[in-house]
Image (cartoon, rainbow, N blue to C red; front, side):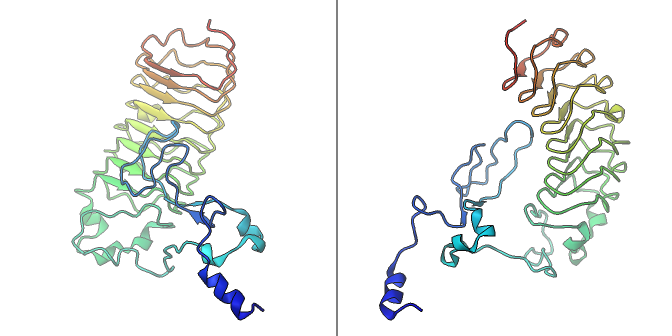
Length: 298
C-alpha cells in the first residue's frame, strides 16, 4: 500500500513523454508508406500493390507486449477510444435525409446491421442513384443483398473477411471492384461484369490467375501480395494497361505476349533472375523489377 506522500508525488508526475516510454496506443504522424495521421482527410498513396487511395486508421499499437504481459500495462497511459455496442444502430447520428454515409473502419460484420430501413428511402429505393459503395475495413464475410444496386459503378469490400467472390452478376455497370486483403483463394464470380475496368485482388491467397474471360474490358489488374508462381490466363485481356504482380513467387516472366496495350508492369519483390519475357512488351512506359535477383540486363 502506498503512503500518502507517495500518492501525492505520483499525482504531480506528468505523463511520460513519448520519446522515453510509449503509451499503449500512439497516434502516428506519418508511417513508412506516407499515410498522414495529422488530421488531414487527403488519402495518401499505398505501397504499390494496391492502386486505390484510402484514408488509414490513425492509431497504432506501439508496445504490443502489453497485450500478453500485465507488467507492461499502465492504465493511466491508455488513450481513450470509441466503442460501439453490439446492439447500437450505427446510423443513429445521421439525419434521415442524409445523402452520404461513411462507415469504413466500423467493424461491420453484415449489411443488415446497418438498419437502413430507418431512413426515408430504403436501400432498394436508393438503387437508381447509388453509384459508389465503400465498405472497406469491416468484418464482412459474405457478399449478399446487393442485387438491387444495378447502377453501382464502384464497389470496395477491401480489408474484410471474404473468402469467395459471389452474387455480383446483377451489378452489370461495375467498372471498379476492390477486394484487397481478404481471404480469397480463387478468382471467380465475375460473370456479367463486362464493363469492369479495374480489378484489385492484392493481399489475398491466390495461387493461379484464371477465370478472367468474363472481364475482357479490364484495363488494370492488381494481384500483388499473393502466392502466384507464373503469369497466365491473361490472353483475353487485350485492353490491359496496368498489371501489378508484386510480392508473389515468380521466378520468370512469361505470358505477356497477348497484352499489346500493356503500359505499366509492377513485378518487384519476386525471385526473378532475368528480364527475359519482356521482348513483346513494346509499349511499356513503367517497369518496376526492384528487389529481385537479376544480375544483368539482357
